[in-house]
Length: 460
Ligand code: ARG
Image (cartoon, rainbow, N blue to C red):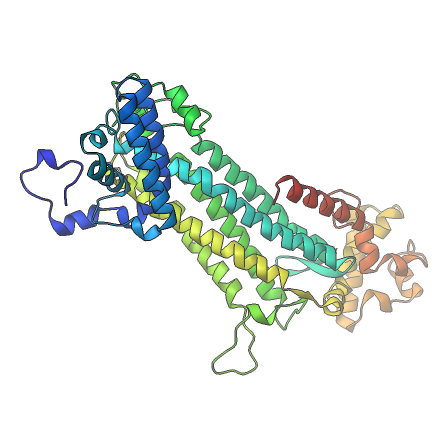
């Protein structure tokens, strides 16, 4: 196998070491970006007078044909080459001879690989965002279908206050919307042209990098050729966005695993997205959700892996940087697979209104009782104590607020009136909330409408 750097060496590379260092097995995924970048580089060389019009045309035609071939037959993108850059150049030279050999003038693989990864992220992030929006869409649909259904919320995983089921679903849509914005940030960070940086010091040919940036659809050119050759911040930002998306999916999965279980059973998982046990006939297991939770470790690992790889590098390209691609591809695959299954699981949930509402009552109304007293002029800290004492008695006697007679209420505080019973229900509790981010039905309806508008705006 000839390499792009064989001239300086007496002997062929050690086969095992060559294989160890080769990246074609995974960077073939950058094939289309490699060609797009090379097409533009050929045009830039022609504008700089390095290639004649005829040479540029031949290169352009040959690269376009390769792109066509690789797109229609992915198996074509294969061979004994060191990496995708070597592969494309080999085919070009096989076809055009010396004309093909001119394309690498003034260019280094160090900047090519950065370019390819930037182009790759630019085209792969929007589909990923659409998958995130797909989960938001499923959550919004469940929120809509839930209507005025009630369930408990939890703090410290102990029942806290009644909420609308819709509020629960939208609470998982909010972080996913932030993930979309974070992915936008990664896309914008990738949006800088590294070509013109050469191997590290720049290029000695009169390349109009601004025109080249425009040609490739980049909004700007990198600041510094040395920085550009080893900058993988954009990849790290992407991995952070993926890691955090997985953290959010993992928490959604965890909530659903618990709340679909027999102990709570606010929701039922669709049979199609559950699994059975080989031994225990009664089991209905949430395997897809457990895998989403489990796979979050991969995405977090890819982020930590890349940060660790780049932290000790001397300035300039180092081969360590080749580790960036498997991290990016691995995170992308993990996130996209998990988003797709999360969407299906959420879409397939059935709400158990009776169980969910039953769990939203009882001691969860204690704050509402305290708020009632505040409304009658009792200082909150004092009200908290009074209600705490009522709760203690009720628990000891195995009773709930609704069993209290007016006399019993008034024994605890003479501020209680006959309207207290109507004020201390799960429905009254949610209706009493006043802020736009609260579980008040009107607030939740407004947020849901806003989520729908976001989904529409995003064209997702
Ligand atoms: N396969 C290499 C990578 O992924 C491409 C750049 C190689 N540059 C070099 N000087 N060896 O980083």
